[in-house]
Amino acid sequence: MPPEPAADRVLLAAARHSAGRTAAILACSLASAAATLAEPAVLGRTLDLLLARDPGAPRWVALAAVLITADLLLDAAVALLTGVTNARTTAWLRTRGLDRLLRSAPHHAARFPPGDLATRLTANATEAGTVPATAASAVASVLPPLGALVALFLIDWRTATAFLAGVPLLLLLLRAFAAHSADSVARYQAVQAGIADRLVEALAGARTVAAAGTAAHERRRILATLPDLAAEGRAMWLVYGRAVARSGVLMPLLVCLVLAVGGLRLASGAIGVGELLAASRYAALAAGVGAVAGLLGALVRGRAAARRTAGPMALPAPARGDRHDRDLPADGPGTLELHGVTVVRDGEAVLRGVDLVVPGGTRAAVVGRSGSGKSLLAAVAGRLTDPDEGSVLLDGVPLHRLGRHQLRAEVGYAFARPALFGATVADALAFGAHTPTGSALRAAARAAGADGFVRRLPDGYATPLTEAPLSGGELQRLGLARAFAHAGRLLILDDATSSLDTLTEREVERALAREVRPGTRLVIAHRLSSAARADLVIWLDEGRVRATGPHARLWRDPAYRAVFAAAADGGAP
Image (cartoon, rainbow, N blue to C red; front, side, top):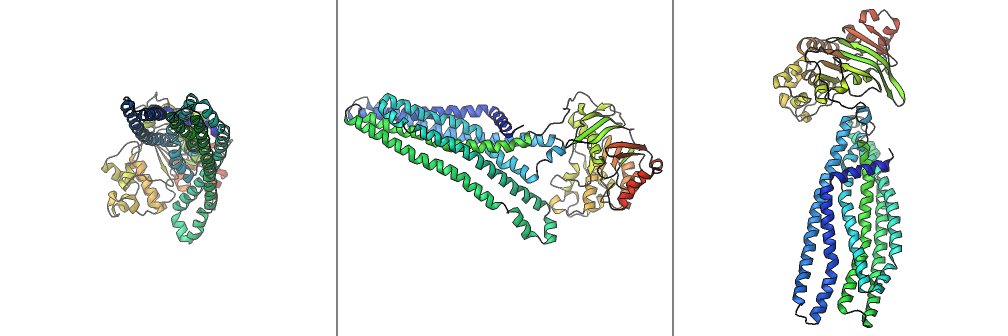
């Protein structure tokens, strides 16, 4: 979808979400505008009555005081409502973007670099969140100038005509401002996101940077586009400054012209002193149309920010949806079936017509050369991504017809580089679809060979993650422990033991067979020993299942042996 329509759709959705509060802002702003419009007429009338010593003058003084007080209170209400609306709309935009990001398949979310993504969901969402309230204020801000112009016509049409002489110039100024401002704001936000992305990248590799002694180089790399950011910032505010300066010169000139014409009309006796006072105030209100440039600028910046915020929101949802109309059989063994599964990436089929049945309770090893589609098969098997063609079933139930909670409770994953979430080690192990008990967490840690080093940490399982320095193998064992603690009928290990030595890997495999909930295991195998100990080997070759069967039988095929020979020579199978 083109960026402009996507941004407009996001802003319309945000406006619907904030409709009630936005309507309240508009109502209060319009009421304030009405009071503002009434003030000059009431003040002018009051002045004439006071000069004439009319006995009705006190009532008009009281009315003027009421109008001024109401105007102040309404302005305060608008300010309060605007702050609340901006905060709530921003929160809604961030929540919606984050929800779509987390629901989308990981390969879709990976389109956005981390720093760029953080900028979209923080700074850009904040600016986009101001649009509904700003739009309401902008609509209301047009009323005082238009009403003032009408009032000028009612007082004396010549004063109104004098003001109208400069309106075409003002409209041209605002149009040019909107066009130039949109371009400069978009460029500024793009450069800002690039700096954020390089910063996040450097922070993620802080140890490598320190070890290489390249901190100065990284600082220069991160800030390389800072001059561009400064230039775009200056350009952005220069556009705004020129618009404000030009309107700041034009509008006072128009007010002076109105006063000059009004003075001549007063001298000729066509209007009175009070009417001249009202005309001067209305001319000042009509000149306030120049202030629309500020609101227009805020809308332009908000729309540009919405264009970037719309990116994560436009990520595709799971291709087949979530029907939530089936449950897994209570006593199912975890039989996994793939029928005609094809997955396309960047226009090329990575998995092609995969047909596969893994009987319940089987330990199946998936082997193949690098790029054969092993990890993608693992992602499809547990519905981290959906196939473009074909279906995936667990115990006879299509995965897309399972509720998300049941799916994640019954299908677990362990990865080569696990990400740990939570304040403490125990929190990281408990992270998942359900919360295991403390004894279950410790049992899972023992099965993964992690209990020993966790107990040696300063506070054991209560040690904050930030204070628990972990080696690659220890991190991987914690990832395995988390998967074991949440093990369902299907457990998928995607190269999850690659950082373990052979002896530890063997101990983990024994514990997995004896101490973890029984079920089906799908193991992405890179070691010959892992394939040799599997009940079933699934041999992938260029996205297709070339053969399945026991390792001993497949070993007779020279091409199968060559898969592991490539690994021994330094290539990953």
